[in-house]
Length: 92
Length: 92
DNA sequence: AAGATATTTAGAAAGTCCTCTAAATACAAT
DNA sequence: ATTGTATTTAGAGGACTTTCTAAATATCTT
Image 1 (tube, rainbow over the protein chains, first blue to last red):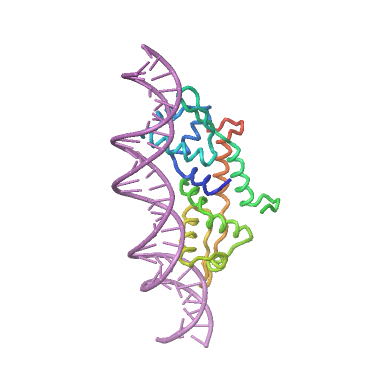
Image 2 (spheres, helix red, strand yellow; image 1 turned 180 degrees about the vertical axis):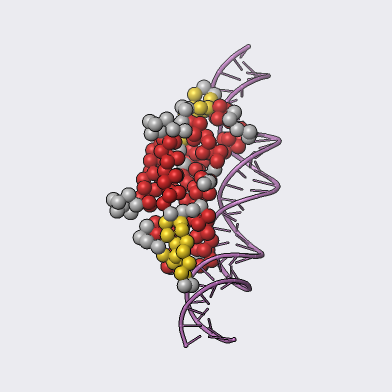
């Protein structure tokens, strides 16, 4: 899975905001870009990082690309953090 | 608090391993360093990043510096992730 | 006080990250 | 087929990261 990739993806404020936007449902790259004062190329760069970290799904439709949240990796990160803080289950 | 700082701190494998080591209780900088094939200066650099992210506490004693886990920031990160994945409580 | 031990700080090198502009690709509509 | 719209890819610039060696600081022991 790659925690390095995941935490690095989550470390950027733009990418965290993209994920928050996607809580409301899937959005096209252009719709996501409209929320930021950045070029589409930069947004595409961030989406690529989120996709590689498997934090988002991508679905092509017509000439749009829709992005949506993938929460399964979020669950894995939460498990790691739970183990770190010591949940009383002695997990390593 | 600064999620950027926190996630960035968690994105490095050495720093994640340091945190995992500290699950077993507090350790001095030297004891931590003994687990890695790196100079003490490099370990000190990583400890500084963990400290600035408030993921560890520091306590000076004699001429040792002991580090221990601070789980409160871990809790905050988990809260953010819980909200992201949608816990049914409509939190933003 | 002098020397030894523990740790940090400073500075440099190599690599990675974020942003931009310009160009490329892909599909849609006329 | 041409033009337009949506998005990505390529390449460059500046900033940040990780590691090292060497030097500095702080504390302990003799």
